[in-house]
Structures are given as C-alpha cells and as structure tokens.
Image (tube, rainbow over all chains, first blue to last red; front, side, top):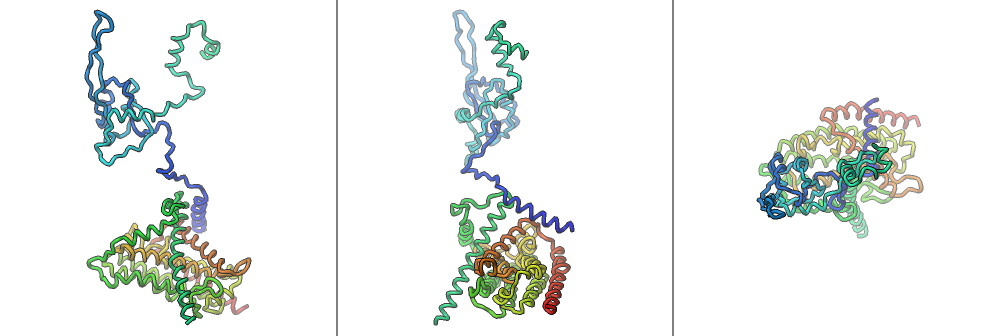
Length: 180
Length: 316
C-alpha cells in the first residue's frame, strides 16, 4: 500500500510543520538582521574622492554622474611650481538605474565608495531616486566596519608595512621572529 | 404564546451559531493553514494575532459593488446565493448539540438534514447557469457530476449507522451509540466524511471551483455580499459536516466525565481541524480521479459496510 503511506506521510509533514515555529519576521515592526556586507545602498566618502571617473566609466548602466573642476593650489614655497587638484562639484548615483553590481565600489582606488545595508529609501517619484553627494554622504555612518580577520589569518599587508616602518629591526619581539 | 417565544429564541440562538461558527472555522483555517505552510497568517486585524481578519473581510465584501453581468439571467443570478445558503441554515436547525439542545427536534432528523443539504447544491447550479459565463457553466456541470457521484456514498454511509441505531433521530442515534461502534462503523465514518468533503467542494475535491482551470467555477461572476454568501455557505457546510459526523459516528455528546454539549463542540472542532488539515496536505483531484474514487472505492465500501451492519444486527 504505497498510496496509503504516501497520504499519511503528507499529513505528517503538514502537522510537523505546524508545530514548528514560523520564521516569519514582521518586517515593519521587526527590522531584519542583515549580514554586514548586504548590498543596500552605496555610500560616498567625499574626502576620498579624486573625481578620477573610474567608477562612472566602469558602471555598466551609466548611473553615476560626476562633475568636477580643477583648482590651482599655490606653490608651498617661494619659487615652487603651482599644482592643480580636482574639486568634486557633483557626485550622484541614480538608484533607479543602479543594478547593485558593486563594480564602482570594487574599482574605486581611493576607498571613496562603500556598501551600506540600509535599504529603506524608496520614493514616490522616480526622479528622487537620484541621490546627490550630500545624500550619499549621509549613508556613511551606516556603513558597518569591515569584518574582523580570522584569528589564524596572516596580518594584513598594511599593518605589516606600518610595523616595519615604525619599529627598528633589533627591537622586534621574539614572537615576531617565531612567526617569520 | 410561550411556545412561539421559545421557538423564536431557539431560532435566534441557531442563527447566532450559524453566523459565528463559520467565522471561527474560517479564522482557524487562516491560522492553521498558515502555520502548516511555515507562515503566521493574519497578524494585524483586531490587534491580537489578527482575530478580526474575517470581520474586516466581511466589511470589505459589504463595500464592494454588486455586479450583475449584462447577459446574465438577473433573477436567477441574484437568487442563487440565497438558495445556496438557506438550506444549510434549515439543516442546522435540526442538529442537536446536547440532550435537548436543539433548534427543533425532528423525528426523522437524519433524513431531513441530508435531504435539505442536497438542495444547497442547486444554488451553485443556478449560479453557474445564470452567470452566462463558460467557466461558471463548466464549474456548475462539474459540481453536478460531483454531487451525483458523492451523494450516494454519503447517504449509504449514513444509512449504515441509522440501521445500527434503528432510528432516524439524531438524539436516538447518539443515545444508542456505544464506543465499540467506532470500530464497527469506521468504514462508514470515513466514507461519510470523505463524501461530505466532496459535496462541499473542499480541497482536495474542489474541482468545481478549481481556480487554475476555471477561475472560480460557478462563483466567477459574483462580487461583494453575494460572493461572501457563497463563501459563508461553504463554511457553514463544514460546520454541518463536522456536526453530522460527530452525531452519527463519534457519539455526539457522549464522552468520559459525563455527557455534555461540550463534547459535541469539541469533537466537531477536531473534525473541522481535520478538514483544514486535509486541504493543506493534498493537491486537487482530477475529474476522472474524483469519479473513480467515488464509484470504485467509496460506494463499494459503503455497500459492504451496510452488509456488515446488517449481518451484525441480525446475528446480535
């Protein structure tokens, strides 16, 4: 009687599911716990941006708008050469076009763009989905810190270099010797 | 004068149950089905776990426009929901809940209730025909064929327990009932319950309203309160089926710790849970499977049960 056992099994599945707790989260009341690297919105750290346009050019759907102008920086000492630097006038991401691929964040050589897990920025007008640099900067405090390294992982290159530069050779501890 | 008053009072109580119990079953269905599907169901209406969801649904239905299709037969179309619902109320009047707790005790209660319940289907047929919609008509015809197939085992199974008790009165059957009948009348009980589900179009026998195939069968064109009346009829039907099964096969108000109407409600409630449970667990049967189940399994089993009941009655 395979039919009969199948029918009973079906009843058993639904009954045991009923006794288990539902995993439903009542979203507007209970905020979801998103993993720290969730792709919610892109935050801009304006000070780091050099208007190099790499992000705008790599963006597959051209949703990043950058305007900038050059400013002349006077020479630091008499007789020196004047330098120019880029000043960011406009940095905007149109989130109605963005497909959240994250390429802009990957290509940014100056760590000016970051993923933030915030996602509640829907609008009634599609034009409001374009976040200018002020709005993009407001997302910065919501960017989570990078996850801690694995305890047995090698020290990051930046830390190694900093340590080598700051500490002269003889004073290195035995623990560091043992690791090398 | 007191007779009239008492009759009126009983009718009012039955009417209250007629309106309240389907809501309870509906809410139970919302929640049980949700949890069986790893959901939580309605949570907001009324505040506590969405207890007022069906009240909110009722208000919504009342606000909707009552549309009659241009090519429909307006009189029949408007009359159909009433005809689907009223017989269930009439049947409910004759169902006892406890000793003496009955709208109107009818001597041939089983006969009366089964006959009246059969009328309710005509409302569905009228709805399907009068809607002037091919899906409605298909649904109505499916309903008719389903009724033909399942009325027979339904009545045969009831006849078995009527034979065993030697009476057509519900009170008489419950009083004659003994616990060992649970085994003796088990096939009849299963046949009765399954055939009853099929008569009510409950899943897995909801072929007449199969939404993936024919939208909502005979009820496709209905809106607003008339649609709500059809839904109400379905849930009153569940109540009726559960009470009928309780009274005929599970001993009604008999139970340990004294005979009380609480037992009837408890048993009927458990059966209502089973109705919902079956709905969640099984997919819809196909038309031919539906006919096969009735003619090749339920009816032979019901006839065999009649034979067994007869032999036991004579040999006892």
